[in-house]
Image (cartoon, rainbow, N blue to C red):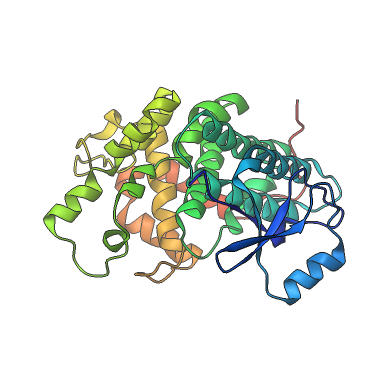
Length: 323
């Protein structure tokens, strides 16, 4: 929660980084000062930490705002850096976005959380508008292991890329009106016990009903964030199915938002394509084959075909100029 120390992954530190907050190491239940604010991090520091298998440093809760500014500045710098390849940009963008996302889902939901979410959207969307290869690279570099915050990032990346490719939505709409729906689509699942979410065997009827209620619970959790109607439809409708067999409302065909159908496709792919405690990972193209066989009637050929092309390499010189 917000009163706890926050992790600062070593992988996101670079030589010469200056943080405007104290940085701590954790020893058991104690946090010990490692670097005072504005003391540069050196390459030797980073090397020593890695040699000692330290994966995270820590930031005190009173420095929350400065911590977020530090991570956001690093994210902006990566996206604007013309000296690194698109592959490295996308990898670093996913790493930093995952750090922000992990923090977001540990907080009480407020305007600060929404602002942090929009920083992720801005970076992902800016990359896609800079270079057509970005959506492909972001899709390919999605993580192999399923965690709640990485699932949110994956669905957000896939959803934004497909929405832009298929519907040509402008940057502001993607960032402020559509993206938050993809990112928070499963927020209601946080209300469920882990033993239900990770159950290998059959769920009871009562447990299944609790899962089927998570879109409504998610909408209640997000009710104070003033999200757009389109974003709330994604949260509420991403488990609806065109034949009326979905939940929580049993909607049919055109009653279901196109953005919710995009989210359904992105979520299903990510569930198949990542390793989970109760299910093995399917390789990328096996996942696409399963969706084509079992899910095509719901999402439609147009959505599926455009989604599949995210995993094919586009022409290397296909670049969009930022207006």
